[in-house]
Image: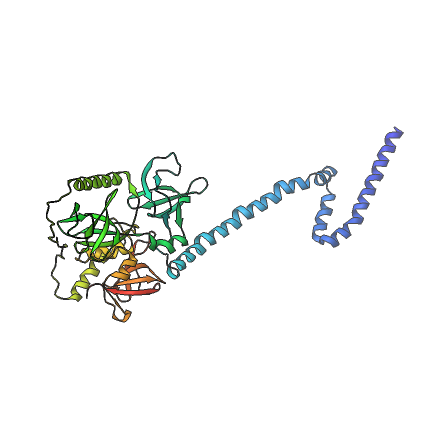
Length: 421
């Protein structure tokens, strides 16, 4: 009994001693962290002992797990990301995008890729080497890059001519290097404008005939002489044609689909059969088939110009397709002006550089009229548009915008070509 009394007295004395120590320490705590926090701690100590022991043993894990993470989580997940996301997604990118579109026009060659291979690159259905082959892009052919793909981002999603698919990026020149080199990859073609044009072994009418090309057929030009052209007649045979019976166009080479390649091979085989016949006795038919004239007779150039502009305006909003061969399904900047003029009986180059260097006559901006072609670029023409009046042009801008109307001075004007007068 005495031992119990002594134990109780010792516990009481120890408790009193602890209380006094806490009471003595409180003022210094209050001076350090502020009286309000000290008062809270004093209040906590005055509760029952089990609560004091729990608050001493478990507060740090509870704060780490329940208080600090929750507060941090609320701020990071609910407040900061939402505010940052709203500002970045709703304000900054849209504003930056609008300014970039207005102040820094996107070049139509910005996403160009040029094949750099010994023969050709397969265009596949998916970005893997075991995917189905949709077509082929031969060396020097160009494609428009739509996206980057593949597990290692080493494939390009491209469209070239009528073919869309995936190619290995390592086999292409792209970016600024492609923009600088693009003019080196233009190919000249001769299109026959007579009913039948003989192909000869040498440049001269007394040379042996090796075959013929019919009206509208197109062959690749290998060399241009004064009155004759060396052309790729069949896959493995060249020959000469008279320059006066063909029109010359400059074009890029594009991918060929499996079907297009089969059709081309059949055409080459047909020419080879003609070559086998040797056409020795066949006279050269030089009757020129005229271009399709405009359906309306115009009383003045002003009326013609107005009709050309009105016709071009019908295609506002149509898609941009690099190398596209139709106004209806989409084409690029030089294709747009080329095909507009073709429908009015004018034959002009298919490329921006060709239209700048070879077509119409050069005039000053002070002389510009609706229907004239404005050529843009720094040292070379990389883009063209058709002037529509009031300081504006209509043009196939790029794959993102399609056919749109811009201010004529939106980019550096290299020259202006009058096609009509």
